[in-house]
Length: 307
Length: 276
Image 1 (cartoon, each protein chain N blue to C red):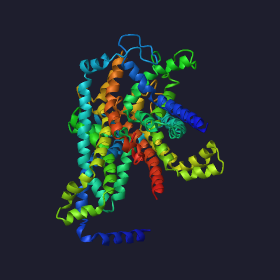
Image 2 (cartoon, rainbow over the protein chains, first blue to last red):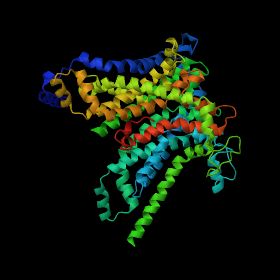
Image 3 (cartoon, rainbow over the protein chains, first blue to last red):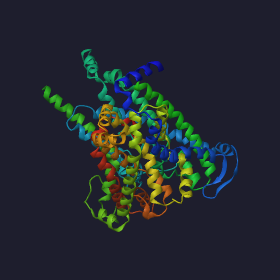
Image 4 (cartoon, chains in turn yellow, red):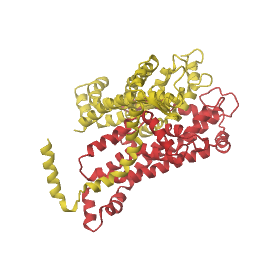
């Protein structure tokens, strides 16, 4: 494999007249240097610092108070913090299936043959263009117990008898999951429409000749063709779910009673409201490993797809 | 007869699609409805506005700090975009044109940063900013926002450089340019449309960042509009028509840019690497 690419490499070079291409390592490094500095200072060094801080008893503003080894990690095993990890899983896994199913359904419908298709697509994608924090404010108002449009519609249609609060201890997580589904649907639809358009028309024509019905075509042609797209989209949505902050923070600030506090919100609370930087860093380290795990799966899958 | 069936079918598809769009736009519509209802009156909802009252938009612009905060947000995003372009053009060029051992690693790091939650590194970032005496400054927000968007910039710009044949650099260098001249006299002008699209994406991306200014800024007059709308909504008894008018004004820049760049975005070309 390596030999093969090397042959290809030399062939390419002889074609391009090697003398003109001075592949000086120093030159390459200089081109990369600005971004290495910026990304290094803002991303890479802080990751190492997070590991280091997680081993200390540390006040966010007051500084280090002493080395505590793995004590912060032991504190992660308290019911309070284990609940955070559990809630994060519920939030991510809870919003995924409906986003994918509704996204597919909506993509198939929006991709049907009707006039003005492009305008409808454009409108459907607008919620995706809005900043997350603004989306959360809009949703907060939509579900307002007294004046919200959602309550009004549900009562007029007869689904609800009287307006209700969607942000109670029992319902807040479900509501947040609903908001996340709404926020991500345009993205899922966008990817699925692109996927649908990549399916060769001939497949459907052949199925027509065989007398297949619409649903059969969906099950035997559309879904198998979109398998890869569905997998990669799920992984991306999963990662983004894991790192959500704005959407939940602006809607419920992790409340009521921490019922909607997932990992990034816990880190924020520990670091900037309780000033326990050590413990916050320990939570961050664990979440880093989880994200790394999902990312590696994602890279492997996209690499396979490219080959 | 067949025509009639076909028309009915299209009408059904149109209705279904319309329904989907209505569901997706409902929260925005609800916000809009409230933003045009007179403040202090009964806010009981209705599907159709009783009366279009645009005074809220004027009031929010004149009587609150929204104009200033909007300007802050646009300023942060523009400066970040300038930095991102300056930093990522050379890197994108190197990745597109040179072969080197660490390229795979470099690309992996670039992509990984897009998966990272800023929350996981916020404590060291916060301390870095404090130690450099940059807490509550424009500089801190601009630099960190720029760093957050740099991977995106490198990724997109590289894709554009890849579409330009290497022979063009060669031709320029044969004619006596050095490589840097070849980049800005030949490659950049050819990639101009791509660079504009990339700039739009980077601008939108940094405009949407909420967490960094929330943590790194203290004075309300330095807030970008995203944070000021949030604080407005969190007041004890917010005037919802005002909040909604501010929210709608605040979301306009990314929405307008999205509509401008839609040809690129809906092509699904690089949709897989869009950050949410």
